[in-house]
Image (cartoon, rainbow, N blue to C red; front, side, top):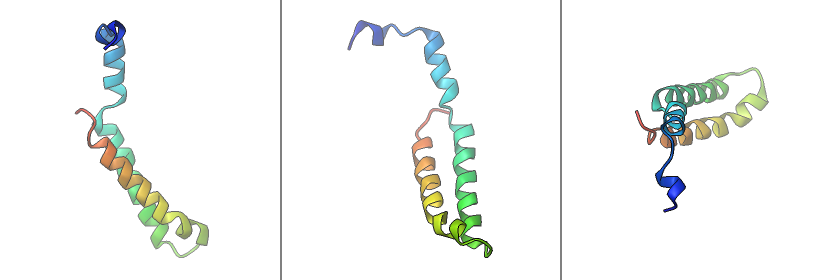
Length: 71
């Protein structure tokens, strides 16, 4: 490992920990999944139905990734 990687300042480390906390990102992923389900079940506009599976899939993959973030 390089010397810079070992001597990261606490400010950079704490900023990364604040940005990549599990709680807020899980909420975003859950809302994305719920939006996809709403898009799937609405009868009004075909483009929403068309992209609903992609939105549900993106939310699910996002949730799986976010579940590995620190608490």
